[in-house]
Image (cartoon, one colour):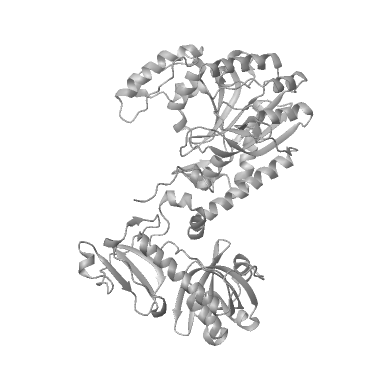
Length: 587
């Protein structure tokens, strides 16, 4: 809700000669001690007004104004003045005998522990027992009332009220209370009671200063709303937006649930190299780095797949890794160059086994994280109770737009090379249709890659409920076993939920001669300029030559799965520090 319009009073510090053409005012709520800067109708609650700590407010006509990402227009001079005031208060706190940045503070409880232990206890019981606590947190609200006052401390994602009274804490500690700003960190020792309104509160007997917030928190009416600022200053985002903290707590539970499931199924968690001499395991463009001591180029891994399958060769029959991958490709709401994947491999299994295991794993995770199998995402009610299956060619037939005329049949798509005329038909319609995306293929695109591209443009956005898309073209699956009845396609699936690819799995190719042929084809594509094509990995071929059992392998995107289970529309919302473009300085 936006703040109601407010009529500013003339500023005592800005004369008409300086403020011509702008609205600049200072508004002080009587008795509240809060000072509000109003510039062209925008509010910034930055500091507490008091005679000993007031400072002139720069006129907007004399200072460069920019939006600070916190819903307020702030001048560079004003920002500096706010910081100067807070530094002045910090000096005053030090003069009272408090350390400006003490080394430790020993708590008896966290704020969530206080609330869990005492929230259900009635006022009479608390008054009788007066249970003592020693807690710490960040000051989020302050309500001074003469010789007493209230504050709310935030910690552990929750808030707890504190009552401070002069005759209870003494003059020195009460002076500290008066010098506090929103965002400061303090420790409080006292006993629990309930106020007249019934709110659970710490009756303070001692305060301990822990750290000064030299920069003001986002003002309460608008909060931290600028998306880019939230990503760049995630610490501030977590501080003022409780729902953001909940996303990352849920993500941690998700990862924990994955480990619980796989460990119970007999999988061993392992670690594989993050810097690799060859970029392998996925068709993706890698990041390149250089090792100075060895004078050699290395690649940040695009996938751990080939190392995990080496472990299968070595006798670890069930392995998994929750790993960081790096792909030097585009950024979107579903793609970040650095991301987290779960990859797991099971000997003596195939892609059908991986589908069954995927269903079990995702249901286990949903139960642990959400308490059920249904959840909302992007306006859809999604259920993990049932997983559908379609081949890639069946999906193309099913989701062909009726407005484009007669679409292909499965017989029409029996040979991958037959897809090109249908792409032309689709493009002719899409070019004239409003809001439809045409499909552009690079010259020399392989038929199998064209089939996948047509599937992506036609079908992906419709795959909301859980569905396995199977039978991928051979050309886009260099590490998969071919289907015995159709060598143009392989035993591979991708799991889609919410219109996003969540998992990718296949029956692993374990024939070293066939693997060499696939690598050589990929190498030919690289020589033609495809930097995402797979390199020839001679050591991996050597490992296969010692014999790898039939194996099923799968990768699941942790970030996208978290998006689903937190109803987050962008991958940046579920990565604490996503990669962003360099920040431009304000002019």
